[in-house]
Length: 302
Length: 302
Image (cartoon, rainbow over all chains, first blue to last red; front, side):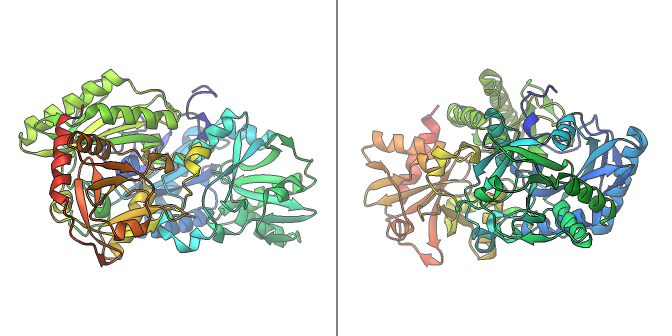
């Protein structure tokens, strides 16, 4: 797949999965089909997922991801995930990836939990691992150019309209992907969503982290954004190292005047925002600190 | 699947597809998997679809559905669908369903067009047909109890925020399904969405049609709703029969005071709304006319 191929905007991998494990522990040939034509994942985007970084044959912060999968499942009215079975499938898939790709290889592990087939809605549950793609490595190293895009929802809807599934990581990601393609069409590589009131929300696949002086800030989850597992781990690690942190509403002006803006996520980890709507953001004095916090956090958080 | 099984809220079929045809014309065993674990339909809801009624081995108003599929694909930045190949696949799938299920059987034919595999985003395109489920037949015959639910978006966003994909029939239907489950949890069977301004939009899988006296009304597409192929055909048919029609913004008060409210769609066709938020709506003097218009429309529209 060429970097400009359709779909590249949202891809965290560039080759197919090398490992496919279903929740019963069975491994599957990744070159053969797995899903039925009427799976509700495919025809309704009706399910939830997680993406987890694999290093050295080990899934990073699996507990945080399984806990979030359970919260997303609850929001969707899906049966509670079988935690022990998911845990085992994740460990097995990560180990197999390490064996096949080498201990140095980074993998993007995906947990997919759909409602099942339309004709048999008893759940479809599987884990894949694919090599981390070059877009991710470039974003980590060089940062990203981002644009601000209206997500269209009020922050109040998170509490008042549970059917909107705000804060759940569902398989219905078409809008997130469309926003990334829109950014690409504007010469940018990523997006920061705002609410209908103009508050900073999140990226389509990341959490926003901002430095103000030596304080790290991120917007509150309760305004309908996905609770970031990596940002949560970073804020914990910052506390341990005596770096001040704050969870507070942010506006675009806060980004432009910040001493550093990062998009933080499980696979890309930490991409500094270099330009926002075409404006070059100032250098980020805490960039090395933030990167070190991320590395510390993902190595230590369960 | 029992009527109360998870997922039943959104199901238009109750058994698996009996016909699966890919765009190359090949037929596939419906009891075997078709999709790869990394298909962007399943992991991102990144694609579009249509559902088409099959009667007597014939797909109804296929032209209208293929035209809408092309519009959805354009909104998603997907390559234009190969119209001739889709046409042929739809005809073939409908014919096979008629042969297998009998000429009297009604089928729900689904066109699925995703961006393809994450590792090979060159498109996944297939057609399935499954028998129409009992929920559909009950809704047609007895009508539905509906509740009004906030869709969270302003009508202005359709024009200003193309990345929100408003008016495109994408595979990311998790919110539509969640709204139907929410209705079920409130003892209702269907939903009418309103915009953040409180305008009537559409159902999660239907278009709203209202009678005011002898005039039939439906809300305008440009407020971010899916242009209904069945309602469009009904309004055309009404014009031919000298029944007045109007496309105009509607508010919940317009529904409560109407002389009939229907949810119109390709599979269920026409379900009269019996109660709205628990209030019994008055009888609909035009109910027989509307049903006759629908039957006339779907039999004659290309």
